[in-house]
Structures are given as structure tokens and as C-alpha cells.
Length: 284
Image (cartoon, rainbow, N blue to C red; front, side):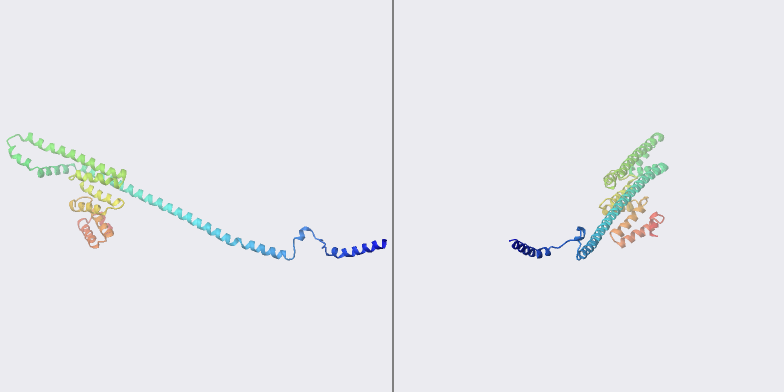
């Protein structure tokens, strides 16, 4: 019986031997078990992929940054251009205001310096416009001359002086409208001045400035500008604005209308009639 047990034990031991032989024996640590001969190759390829992957990403990012910088620079340049345009327009308005103010002061100075010619011209106008007063003089021979003569002379002078003051005030209002509101708002007051004061000493200047105002508005009214310039040139050739008005007609005809023939006629007229004018220097 004991022999039979030993035989069975030996058989059981022999049967379990192949099973035990198939169990692998791990003699390496955990840190070494994860690294196999193939792993470093795969890891190295992954590292190369990781290193090479950011390259296009970095390029795109750099391009985006440069594009953003260019857009910012463009915005900055546009802002500077707009600022310069505003400054230029302000300077133009200031220069025109000063020019108008200087023109007004010169007119006032001329009236203060030369009052006698104005009085003589008013007397001449009175003789031309009121021939009935001349017809009364022979009738008044028998009456004392010292009594009638002052009454006939002083009254028109006072009236003429008051008229000049009213003209001056109306002309100043028209110019002040430009200084306060620009060319567009000054057109109507200047038109009213011309309509209500056709015989004013400022009438040639009024037509000139009305033409200038029509050039300064947006859109430019070249028709009205040329019409008023022509009035100055043709009706008031002795005006201080005549040479400038003629040059403006030349410029508009040449640059806007592209009429070389008419522009040449304006040029020759300017050179002939106003050889000492400042505008003649522009042709040299």
C-alpha cells in the first residue's frame, strides 16, 4: 500500500514538471521590464515626430504674428494720414480766414487814408445821377449863395457816409459768416449783400469772395465760381481782385474744363492788362 502511494506521488511529480518548466522567471526590475529591444526604436521615432511636428505650427504662428504686425502698422499709417489731412484742412481754413480778415482791414484802411477821393466821387455821382440839381442853380442865382450851397452839399455827404457805414457792416457780416461757419454758410449772406448793395464800394470784393466760396464747398460749384470771377474781370477791371479773378479763370479753364484755347486767352489778357500783378509770376 505504501509502495502504491509512492508510485502515485512520483507520477504526480513527473506530470507537474513540464508545467513548472513553462513558467518564465522574471529576474529584472519594473523599470527594466518596460524597455524591450524594440521600444527604443519606437520611442526614438516618436521623439522625431514630436520634434518635427511643431515646425509647421511655429511657421504659421510666425506668419500670423507678422501679418498682425503689418495690419497694425497699416492702421497706424492711416491714422497719421487722416491726422495730417485734418491739419492741412485746418491750416487752409486759418489761412483763408486770415486772408479775408486782412482784405477787410485793407479796405477799411483805404477808406480812412483816402476820404477825399470818396467825397469827390460821391459828388461826381450826385451830379451824374441828379441833373435836376444842376438845373436849379441858375434859378437860385438871385438868392444868397452862402445859404443854399451848404444845404445842397452837406446833406448828400452825410447820406453817403451813412450808406458806406451800412455797406461796411453788411459786408463784414458776410465775411464773418465764413469765419464762423465756413464757405457753405457764407454763400447766402454774400449773395444777399450783392443783391441789396449793388453799388457798394465792396461789390467787386463781394463777387470775388462769392466765387472763392463756391470753389471751397463740396461739391465745387465751378459754374457760379466762373460767373462771379467774370463779373469781377469784366465789370470791375480796376479792382484789386481783378488779376486774381483772371488767374482763377485761367486755372479752372485749363485744369477743369481742359480748354487750352480759352485758357491761353485768359493768360494773355492777364499778362497784358496786369503785367505787375503777383499772379504773373506763376507763369515764370
